Length: 175
Length: 175
Image (tube, rainbow over all chains, first blue to last red; front, side, top):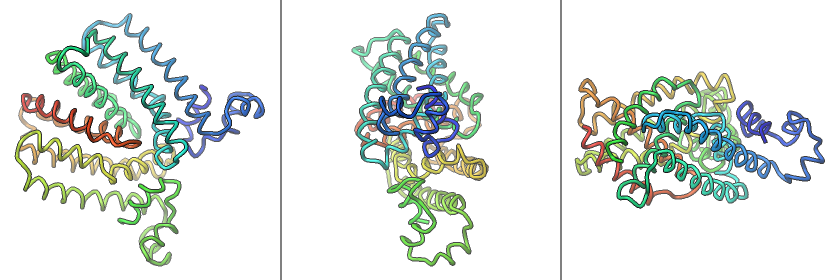
């Protein structure tokens, strides 16, 4: 799973073949085929698996971090501006023009979306049955995805830190 | 230029060959090669050209639209959740793992980024030498890019309208 994500980040969707991943991971093609019939299945499983692991890492980081809104938004923004997002972006873009992959990725998108939304509520210690909370958290997640996109071709960490600080101040007022 | 963007939207980067675009546009390969030596050059030029045209369309729409912050943010968000963004996303993702294309796209990103930022200032009728304006406009643009991303695999217009309404209210307070 990690070799797949690594391969997507380094070589993109077009360079991520099942053969290349099997070589990187040091597993036989037979063993690989036993688990994943297609490149789409392999890549979707890898993004989901590494995504779930990353959510756990994020939770542990949040436990030892400062409890401020700013610290939480920064954690979520940095989590998105990561290799995992880059790998997911390769998968999402490929899925747009591949009908079979698209169905698979839409399901994955819904599951990951719900998980990240729930995690954001938990870390911000807010309840989305309160008025305005759902909108504020959704907007925050759209923002961090936009920031992650801006980080694809060049390191945008400095500007991102600035926007995150600005956003966190507003979010705190709203929540 | 339009045939190139159309091709990127329908078939993605991998399906956008110079031959395919020449056929769609009804021009000879010779004439095409005279202007663009590589697929990268063709696609970057098309995104820039159609981008500049779209900015003009957006300006004209803004002239006849309501002058509220909400109407302006909605225009900018819908402008991003368009075929042009989809085509640009294909180019951006391809550029990440192609060093030559990357240099070209980084320049294009800087130019388009400045243009859209300037346009947002103009439409919102704000001055970024005033405190807080630059941050607010940058956050708005990151947000609309995140919203555009969420629109790639499924129609997200309804949720987007909701987030736009929420953000426009906050932005109005900030500006």
